[in-house]
Image (cartoon, rainbow, N blue to C red; front, side, top):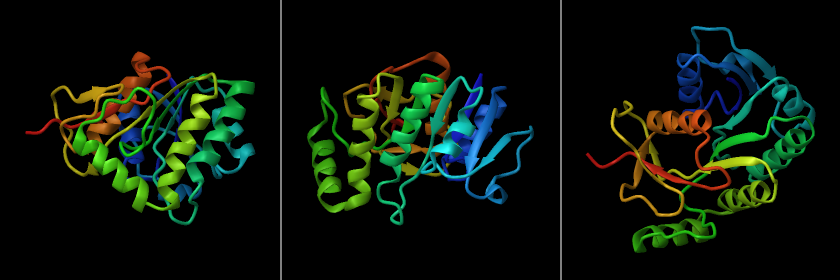
Length: 212
């Protein structure tokens, strides 16, 4: 599969890139500074630019079968994810591909959710205290939900570093997970499973590393 990857220099995005190459995918990445890319065992097509630039996004998508975004939040660009979503939807609607999988957050609410009492309380706190960066995530969701494309927004809880597990992850389209954290390597693995298997089309699944 030919994957267009956004956020490849981030802590989660680097793991997505490594796993995608390990699985034999052809990967194109959009980065502002190619010097920040981690060494890889295979050649990666690099497009220097920003997701806020429509021309850069269009160049990234050329010849791709799916788009994956592991963009992290940034206080400097509080509407980064919504702007990126609008640029991606415009380019994908005109030229393709149709498939998008991105990383969102467990703190946002979507129709049909069945969150536990504790998850509901945490979401409430995040939404009230998180500032403009937190508001960016629901705005991103709204863009994809109205896009008509084959999108998935993965909602992880707290991200932690560590070794990927070998067992089944907790995940569900609307029911919040019992675990309150996910190992970044597990998140990367799940994102690529979703892409490869066509899982959770048009939904925003929760995912977490099970409690040990």
